[in-house]
Image (cartoon, rainbow, N blue to C red):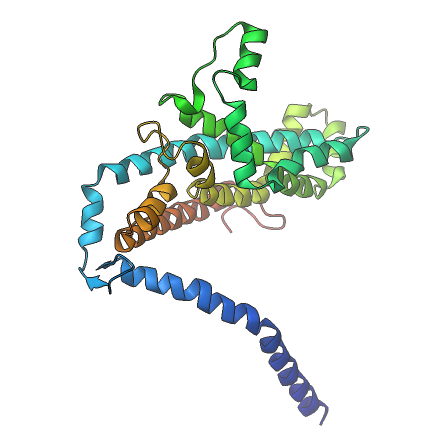
Length: 303
């Protein structure tokens, strides 16, 4: 009798669970799942929004191979990711370690470092346009006043526009810092005390205790960093529009242009699926390599 009542109660809870999550499920199917399936279909079609789609098979995917702007956008995004992701990981970890020290006014410093990551992308882009302005921007003014160096053209220069975006990427590391801080505060202090008793110096403690214990957090931030670095759009759209001479033509910006400037939805869908496969491949590689360098408490390497 008790078991039957419990089963009935469990079924009732199951019904309520589906009832409460139904708004999210319906929204996901209509606004996420539906467009994903539709984009896969359109990627095999010639579709300009106005007229019905015409099935063309693999033509959009074959067109990618001969499209120089596809390779240019891929090159720009890959270069940005290769430099930006490791740089952001190292800088955010270093700042998190500093913010984890027991010093006065720490809450204020943590707030200061986190606040930029919650500001709108367009507002941030407009701010950095002023900072990178070669004539009256604060960056070049500091270079001249401190080092007597004439600064480059930054976002107006083919050579310097990508470094400018990489420097700007450091602005949004506040989210990563917060995650690192949570990880640092979960490391048992007994480990550091035991290491100090054994005579370990700060560098040894960082290399042998902090880094292994933080490896799951680094793994998470690495995955998120790779995904977000391949989706750079707002900054390039607002600040440069992909210029000068396609030097900042990021991949998602090229997808946007094909979809909403040229109304070539079929080709844009094919571009989007290629991006999905690239990110999926990189994510799987990182996951596959994780047993070699990610340490989980209570498990041995490779298990």
